[in-house]
Amino acid sequence: MRVTFLYPDLLETTPDYKGAFYTGIGYLSAVLKQEGHETNLIHAVRSNLSREEFVSQLAAADPHLIAISSTTHMFPTVKKLLGWVREDGW
Image (cartoon, rainbow, N blue to C red; front, side, top):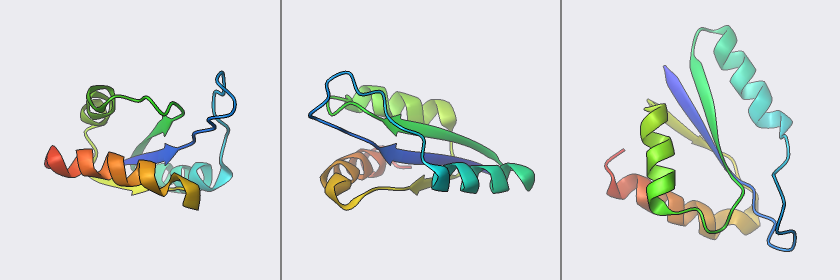
């Protein structure tokens, strides 16, 4: 199975923010890989991530399952990204 993790990690107050490593996603990915699954990550660190760019990354991953991890204040971004996922029939 191919699992794509989606993590919106936006920090609007720091324009050059590159994101951070999150152990929870790392642990889940490691366990899935140990069991023979493929994983990848869409780490959204820009609030201006375009629909085309996001859908392109998702299409390249061709996931069987999309796993989302988010903090509460990222919910509007998650909602937007999931809307794009649904619109494209994933």
